[in-house]
Length: 357
Picture 1 (cartoon, helix red, strand yellow):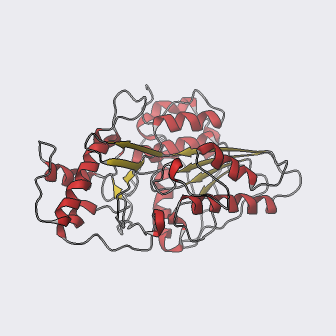
Picture 2 (cartoon, rainbow, N blue to C red):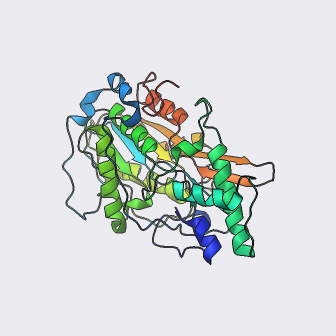
Picture 3 (cartoon, rainbow, N blue to C red):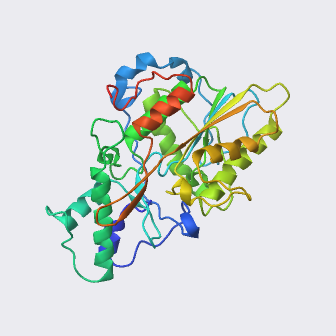
């Protein structure tokens, strides 16, 4: 995500794209070039420490052997794995908005919130002037303001502003806390595996991944590393990401031996901030809903495989009274957490971010 998007619109042209997360229609998203800040919380599950009693502790008793510094993630897993979490980062562990004709998604972080406030002032209307760049900055500011005011579903009026990243971090701590809780619910390592599907899996981002692993470890109260990553292929749209996940599942079944256990797969993806009705056909199949995407992934396994798929599409969109369309990768909301926990066999699991909601 482009972390300084509003400022760049006021200064000059947009930030030049770097090797990073591809955007829909082939554009490349700019990603913050600074190091991820990983504050370690005192509670194993962060703000909702009281939830620990409801969650199995065994998941952090066994830890995978850490990778050598700078080494890339592999694409293979053990044959006895029975639960896999496939995890994107942008739009899952942070919140960002898609913008028309932009080379970078607009990240919801404290810097951009402050910039938006200065541009809009107390009236909520832009005070910026100075041509197309100022107009683009004003529209970005309106998006940030709208996202901050958008209530999260069934969270007692709490808004998306509560999920903003704190600079210089590129992930939001509440969202990392929810992921850590889901990793715990998924069971013991090595029968449980966490697979990275984000563009962060590229070799150029090993530092980011290592910092993210430390952040997750802080919430788990024990060492955590990703077990594998999806194949490195060119991804320009939601269909490419879906096909890549399908490739991983197909390759996994080619590696699994006879008598391997039933497999359940939880996928956390925003698919490049794209609504399901805007997804393109994948490998010639019409995929335009979460259910059809789940069916596509399931179909990449051999016939008769005991495979259960749950896809959580972390996306939200709405249209402002002004006509401005807002489309965001919304992160793991409380509703997503409940759905995921139920899929993992814990329908009464407590949300570590808002345990009383």
